[in-house]
Image (cartoon, rainbow, N blue to C red; front, side, top):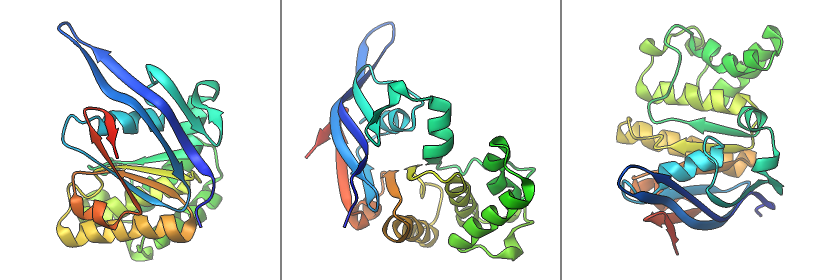
Length: 224
């Protein structure tokens, strides 16, 4: 049974202007996201998916409407703290630090929070195990890992912050089918077994087919 809504968007719009026109990238989007569920947001390029993700992660501020985390308006929250502790973003191109080992990459957000190295190491090891990487991977640099393994490290790094919302931007976009399926299974398990709210923006209709809820965007609008 899903818990109460952790993230609420109420008539959220976002527009940007260039010399020639004003573009409404997100247009009166309203939806409630719950913990324990795996969501897919689909739509063609230019439909507003990535802008919507930026709004949910707090990188952009809505032109109109309200976004609430656990009932609190994001506008009233410390956005650095929100991004550091409550929401994590997983990228298509992994965004790992090439000169840090897998373990050091996962520990990095904890260093930013000032956590003791010994505690951070244990927590990072635990999260790497959650995504199926044992100690034989800890000392490997990103260049020594496959794409699928790099994405697992990136997911472990997202988990280590303790955030309850995992947002993923085309997380399987750079992976072959088998590795892509493995990553989707990990994200689904995190939603269903560990009660994360997992929201994936994707072109991949296979991901959409296994999601608990699939939202479609067209011209920035939610199509029901």
